[in-house]
Image (cartoon, rainbow, N blue to C red; front, top):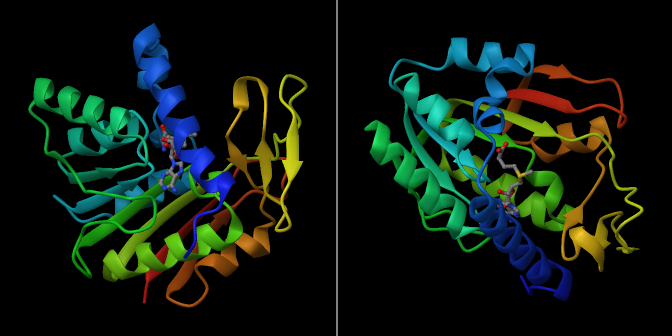
Length: 224
Ligand SMILES: C[S@@+](CC[C@H](N)C(=O)[O-])C[C@H]1O[C@@H](n2cnc3c(N)ncnc32)[C@H](O)[C@@H]1O
């Protein structure tokens, strides 16, 4: 796939934002606000994961969710376009002696073998790429998940309006910010059917949460 300007911009945006977050120092509260208490689907995901599961935290940011999963005894792999966040996650995991490793990732392909994981968390990240890109990433997640693996995804509510940033609307409905604090960021508001459609072929939908695009939507799936 050819990478377009907005896609390249997006990687640079996340590297910049994560590096500056780390430089400014992360508020303790934010580190504590993991996905765990955010949704009944998170509770279902955690309950159904086997003990010591191999979990991929896809789009792991600075690793708050990965560390939380590792503290529960799971063996976690982080991957993100922003290596700064990955390195920070590994450092924190080392300090706590937690089982967290990183998979090489170029934005499209995760360096993991087929069927390598028992669970995947993709929390607030697939809505930060274009629809075509998200479709490719969904296929990549299907590839690395073993049959029976669980997938928990979270898509944010539509927060595309930002008075501080100019934005162009791409053909597929993705907002590409061109100025201000979001410069370079991609955000695509998803309908519920679009979210379900991304995983329709290789995953069974177990639970779904969120009525419409005004609230976060979460889906829990099982790999067929
Ligand atoms: C809103 S943050 C969420 C981070 C983390 N999941 C959390 O909940 O703390 C979005 C994350 O998606 C990552 N991201 C952006 N584009 C991505 C891509 N193509 N593949 C994987 N992750 C990506 C960003 O680098 C960033 O860490």
